Length: 353
Image (cartoon, rainbow, N blue to C red; front, side, top):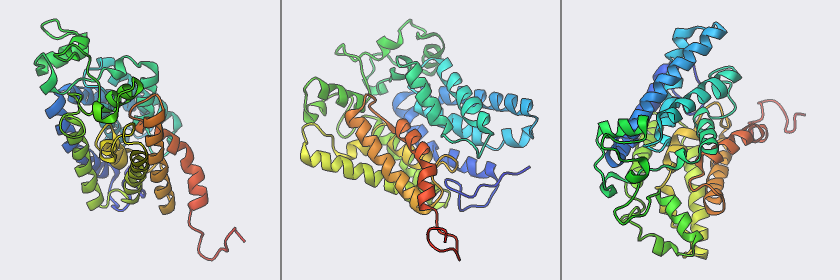
C-alpha cells in the first residue's frame, strides 16, 4: 500500500511518501553535521534513540490497529519525526528524554488521531513542548560549544553522560556546562534574555563568550546548515517557498522595527535568524503538510503569523527560542486560516451564492 502526498512539504513531487520523507531527512544532514562539529555526538545519539523508539512505537500501535504494518512503518514519516526531535534536544539531555519524546509524538500526537495525514499538530514540536513543560531542568541543559568546554568530550564520554549523567572520568553535566571562568553556559538567545533582565544592554551581551564574533558560536552555522537544506527542498519543489519566506520576512520586519526603536534592548535581525531553531522551523516544521495551512494565501499568513509569534515570545515571553510554541499556535489557527483563504470553486459566486 503506497501513500501519496499532495501538499507541502511534499507537494509538487508525486512520488511515494517514503521517497519524499527520505528527501526531507537528507536535507537535514548539513544542519546535523554542523551540530556534530560544534557540539559533539550528543544530538546524533538522541536522533538514533528517537528513531529506534519511533519505529518500535509505530509498529506496536499499527499492530493493535491491524493496519498494513510494513508500508506504514517504512514510509519514513516516523523517522523524520524522530530526526526533528533529536536535533531539537540539548545534546547532553538524559536518554529517556528522546525516548519519551518519540513515544509521545508517535503514539499520542500521530497515531491517536488516526496516523499520517490526520494529526492536527506537528508531532515533533508537540513532543518538544510537552518535554519542555514537563522536564524544564533536563530540557535546558544546553551544552556549550566544544571549543569553550573545560573537559574534552569524546563519543564515549557523551554516551556515558547521556545514560548515566556522568562522563567516564566522573564529570557531571553541570560541570561540563561550566565555563573556565566559573559560570554556567547557556544558548545565545537565553544569554541575551537573561542579560537584558538584569539590566545589561544588547551590546554588552554580545561580549559573552558564547556569542563569539557574530551571532553565536556554532548556532549560526547550524542555522546556515538547515538553510542550505531548506533551499535544497525548495529547488526540488518538495516544499512551497512561500511559508519559509513569509516566516523569515515577518521575523525580520518585527525584529528590525524593535531594533530601530531600541537597539539597546533589541537584538539585530540576523541574530534572530541565525539562533535557536529559526531555520529548522522555517523549512522543516512550518511546511508540515498535515498540520499547516493548505491554501496558497493560507501558507503565507501562517508564515507571517509564526514569525510575529516567535519574535513576541522571544522578546516578552518566558521561553528564549519560541519556535515550537509558535508552530503549535499556528497549527491551531490553520483550519480557520484555510477556511477564509481557500480559493473559490470555479463556477461558484463569492459567498457561496
